[in-house]
Image (cartoon, rainbow, N blue to C red):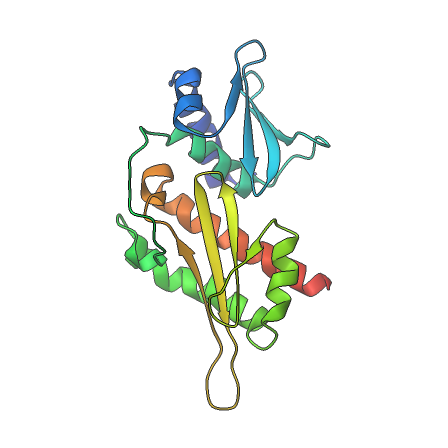
Length: 206
């Protein structure tokens, strides 16, 4: 693990252990077993075990250990958990998320959004094929779009607008405003980047 990732990984485990695990399970759509001291977390429709004894994370079906970036997102999800609040459901861009969304947007656009445009801007329907592999469900925005459940409380929407000789292709990743209460802003960016990179990776494999 790279040093910065390791620091974040260890910090979030400490944060989780300072909390009452049963309370986390009431705040989020996760389960916790006090006998094993394990959380079960749904991440993009796959179950992961987060073991508080060994501070390890692995996929329930086959024991696969996720990359450090995925692990940090899941840990932050548990560590950041707060009391549920009612927020109007709508879609917003990263620029509209408080506590740094607009500040980080240029870098996010350069890497994640431009990557999506390159991958799907002239073959938008390919997005739906790649999205299905991550549990994404088609929706009606743009030329092609899909909604993903990163976690049960956290949906993301990816939209592609195809380009032609006159109009440049475009793309976006949208979030619900409630995400600011569920993840740290840097993790929000990491989550959007993870989804974009997974879609781009799958695009190259078809």
